[in-house]
Length: 105
Image (cartoon, rainbow, N blue to C red; front, side, top):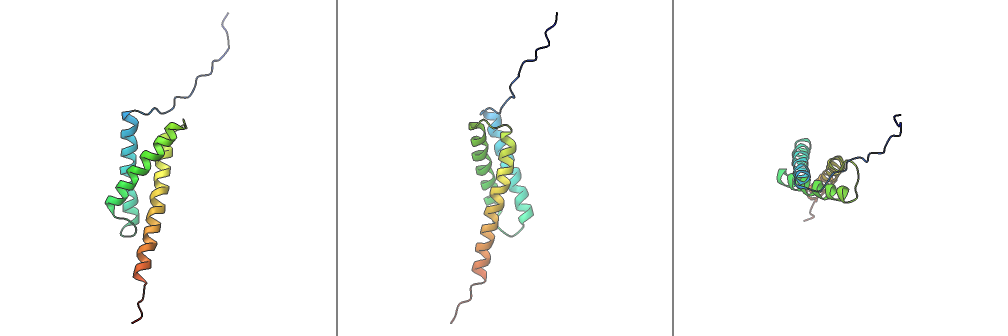
């Protein structure tokens, strides 16, 4: 007689290995480039967006792997977009603040 008991199979989480690091860096570079295209001349330049994208993606991805969250690469992508958006917005305000300064002579 066949048993109808189903066994629980755990969901495979991301592991911290070379492939995961490669994908985190690739995601960071791609998102940094796309954010640079969207922001245009406002905000940071291309090198800053690429560097911020890689740093944000790797840090957020490592945190997600360490906390054993499902979809570490997805967390890294969403977190990197949010991080770069905020950095670009604040650097845009800083640039506009310098341009609107009127000196009284």
